[in-house]
Image (tube, rainbow, N blue to C red; front, side):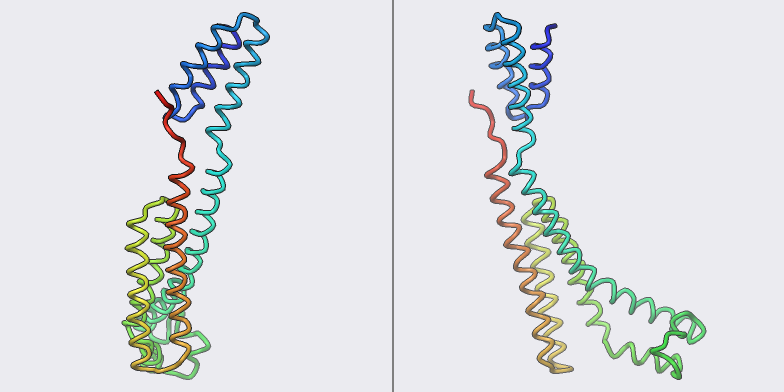
Length: 216
């Protein structure tokens, strides 16, 4: 097998599956070239063209943008989940070990009994903790669906997160009315909305930049 033929086989292997039929056309063109030097130059050009179709700068930029948006969504998830999980760990340690555990030695509980410390934590209300966790996991799920390009899953994650935020805000305003509750609520709802918009944009760009099947 000549060098030109080896290069052409490599180009055929590199081509996206939807464009493998182009390899037959390249081989037909190569067979019509008699000069070995010209054949190698032609085959090398085919390899370069194959890599350009496989390594599409637009596709790379699209994947990078997906990962960036997903990273921001994961930061939002961590902002909701980590402090809430810490609150649950403190509460669990106080109930299991009282003031003798690690949670009882925290400065915020200095001079308090275990019952007083637990009562202070429970002022946050279990529904508040539950809804905050739902929002956090909704952000994490949205990040996953943005990366995978699954619009239906992204829509469900955004809807669940937005509804959890709406319910949390309504309950907070009912028990502890404060303008700051609505301010934080709008931040989360806008964030969920932007994730949905980003997902729609990525979905459209993915369809636009996807390699088209070779014409018969």
